[in-house]
Length: 363
Ligand SMILES: Nc1ncnc2c1ncn2[C@@H]1O[C@H](COP(=O)(O)OP(=O)(O)OP(=O)(O)O)[C@@H](O)[C@H]1O
Image 1 (cartoon, rainbow, N blue to C red):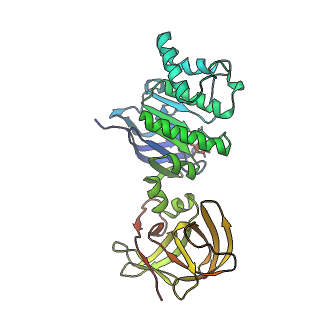
Image 2: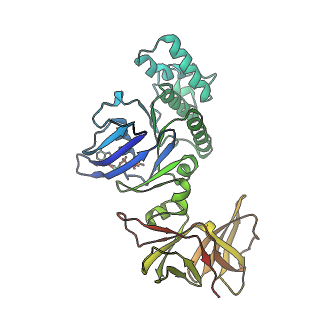
Image 3: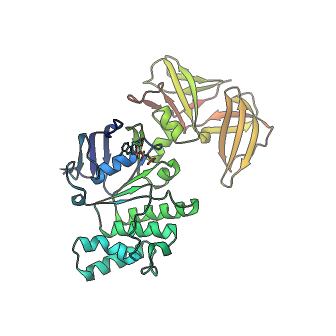
């Protein structure tokens, strides 16, 4: 039997004529955390609501563990959805919020008490069982919402921007908790976010969406280091995209640097995406891309430098093992092996990327 969630050719147009999902094709593997990542309005929440059964697609099918759920009511899908607004029952204590779904399922009282104590413990809510939601912090409310969802032991946990109402510190804590719980309990989680750093830090698989379409699926590392379109590269942050030309031998020239894109790329216009970590910075020499440091900031684990070059002003992030170059210093830049991709000019429907494993200096 096919495991996990499988979305096939999902189409959705709202009553006002807005076509929000366009042929979405996607697999969510079991016991993994998959994020739906994309800018506001790209259709992430709509897709999650379709999976939960709160909306019905106009076309396409939703399979879970090989069964077609497309027309099945929400309460018969064995899934729990947690919203950004928590949606706790305001007049029920933490414990009663957590037990609510179990009661509705008809679970005996003793079993309810045992299960709720277990998830309350897992989420670090011990001692707060009798508090009402308004007597909790935002983080505790969100943990209660998660506890209520997990108490049902759903086959699939759906999280819609679960951290968006929390401050930066708490976001980091709770996202680590969610990731740990997911791994410890082997949960299958589909997690919506518009924050690429959040997606990178919690996911096994990232699904990038743009205007109702899935544009790339991969591990956080794949998506960051080998974006398949300019949109993905820019959305994942901090990349510089250069217009360039590939010769018949797969060589792409970027100023004085040559990138070996290898076989499989036809001669013609290409785009080169460079992550700031891909630049190697050295004291000025006769090779590499000449530049002058404009600004240099020490950030604890890394140093960020803006460097003025013939290719424009470039962001360079280097770790602390390298030498620090102060503002005004003449430098030479080289490209290292990772964090450089060569793309065909932007096309959403036919993304294609060539990984670059080699860049070489030219005199
Ligand atoms: N019931 C509705 N009727 C009409 N349009 C809708 C409806 N719900 C959502 N939309 C529109 O569909 C688009 C996608 O909405 P959706 O909430 O799925 O996006 P999203 O990617 O989750 O965005 P966000 O991160 O802002 O929540 C938006 O432009 C939104 O205005």
